[in-house]
Image 1 (tube, rainbow, N blue to C red):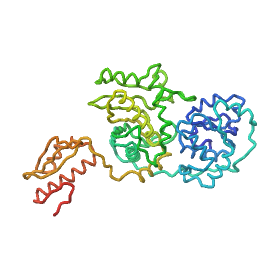
Image 2: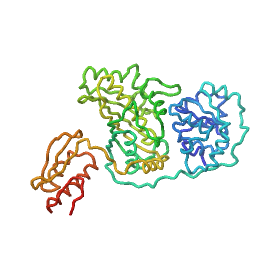
Image 3: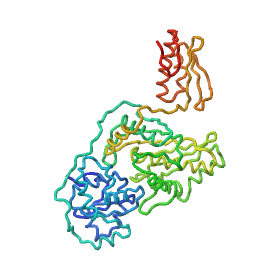
Image 4: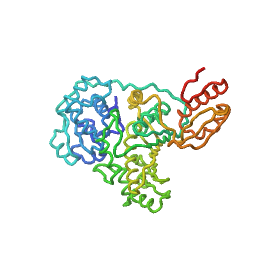
Length: 463
């Protein structure tokens, strides 16, 4: 079996005989590889990045298939807390809830027992000094025979018909909206291969709208894969122009120091001068650098617009991992939106986050399915932004009174049957559940009118 089995196109192998595996965080593996002197390269069997704590599964799986690698070096920037998580996992055994159930507990313990004392946390600049002191060949064997654990159980693949492109979802809180997103991608996404040699399930152009998330007090739940500290660690990637050592760029560096231009500051100044401006836009895409670049930025632009007394923000992302990345990206964009709104001394409006390739990787199909099954409410109860309707019977007619979300009367419609009302009000309805509810109520009203029954909205007819 070719090694590594998992992520073989994302792991550098300096020497097939090397006995050190190097785990980097967000520092580019290519950068770490370049730091290692030629005389030390033959000691290195693999170099790969650990972006998230769930990636530990594939470290364990790959190492049980390669007994030659008996020592680990952990180095690089830990922007997501994954390296600290791995260190705690080895030292205390905590965090095993993220591991695949197909990896037996005794093998997990065997891994911990060995690598707890054979993992070295080394600063990037000290790598060569550390390696030069180590022998050329491996003196220890930690595994007598390779083990290929069963693949992680995957959800059954069912393809449902859909609109194919442009899906709109809205909610007050990012966590609640995330559950809806996972549900839609799993139900309606199309299975296709990714550029990382892994299957994905993908929707095209998912527009997600957040209308009531306080970026200073984010609503977080225990079933998220990150906590508040992880979020605080992530924010600087959008909120500052700092480029961490070993990282080519960050979204923040492109937004706040693009060839010397702070685009966030510039769009704020533009809106201060003209609050009706449609040019308050910031880009991360550098045509000279990113055309054909496999490491090009995923978030490509943000666009601020003032309407009424609110600051609305739209962000476009060419490729978005909806299970592993969308929530953090959304929290950070909401933070940027507040920064702009505060600078203009106006309120925040809604955030619209458009994900062109909205996907979930195959490795996360089961976890995403379980998250939806355990935590997503069966009924998605949200207020229709186009308002609500009061249904009554007056003067032998069905009357539908239209009210704004704030409860203000707008207009009135009347007819002798449900179809007549439907044809008048359908453009004032945007939420599917609202439409279904109104359909039931109008049919009840029609039955009551035809049979001389008493009708009360949201109450059963007494026949």
